[in-house]
Length: 400
Ligand SMILES: *Cc1c(COP(=O)(O)O)cnc(C)c1O
Image (tube, rainbow, N blue to C red; front, side, top):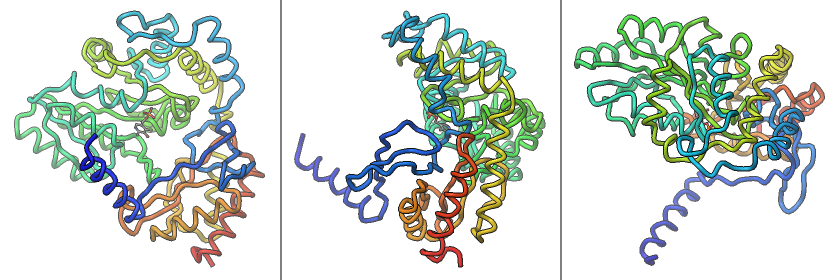
């Protein structure tokens, strides 16, 4: 290690600190859930209401998932110590892939260690330099990285701007692209806005393009039976990616679902699949149990959207400025970055755990606290959190 190298790294850290951009991680000492214990200033803060997990259906500490995961260690062992194609495929891995494909209305699916890997994997084997990818400007970092790894020509359209998407489709067609793929998040997670899949799929048809949707913030709870954003709109998209790390248990794992030939080729060529370990059996078994719960009925989804409505109405009547929407992501707009940090700190004093988001994660002047509802929160939790928002909001002058 050279001194010059370490000096440069330290300077970068110092500049992150000076810009007020240093991320600090608070330690949770309980399971993830609606109420958590958080270590703060050397003390355990119990029963903190958690409003920033992607735990939409409240499955992160669900007894059914924990029970099957425990049992799986006896029946299937701890780890696979192999990639899938050498000796890392158990019966349950194929079961999960087929089950998931049926749930999503696709011919087959393929598992990855995370959706980050699925998005890193999906473009490069399918598209070459003769092809084009048109990507929404607000797509998740993993889609951006996946596109960077692919040799196709890249176009970017302004978030959900259909005129701009059409302009880019024309440009790609005029430049002689062989295949064109539109890539979009199903839900844009900073705003909770839904992608305009009806218009995206119409434009795709008009220009003979394919559509890839990353449904991480939708699978399990948006659309009928929780089948995601395409089902929500009753449209068909070509390729889906998603995660087990959010609504479907919150542990780890990702997937790509699509036509048989596409999945077959990905199994041959997708690098994060070929050169990375197989998912642990416990995660696979628990993902199957999560799908059981998702398919068993609408109770969890009903609770989630009931909570979302109660929460939105409560915040609005306190006078907070919210972004409109129907998704369980409910952003509380504060504008100023410092204000969003002060508000988050005050909320924690009142036993409410939230995350403030500010530039460069969101545009300058659009700092916010992104709250996320989940089915594990009770009305008592929500009233407690609303009371915290009222007190914190008045203390920092965000509401009167
Ligand atoms: C969370 C998320 C990912 C990453 O998923 P992991 O399984 O945690 O890697 C990818 N895309 C979107 C849109 C996400 O929200």
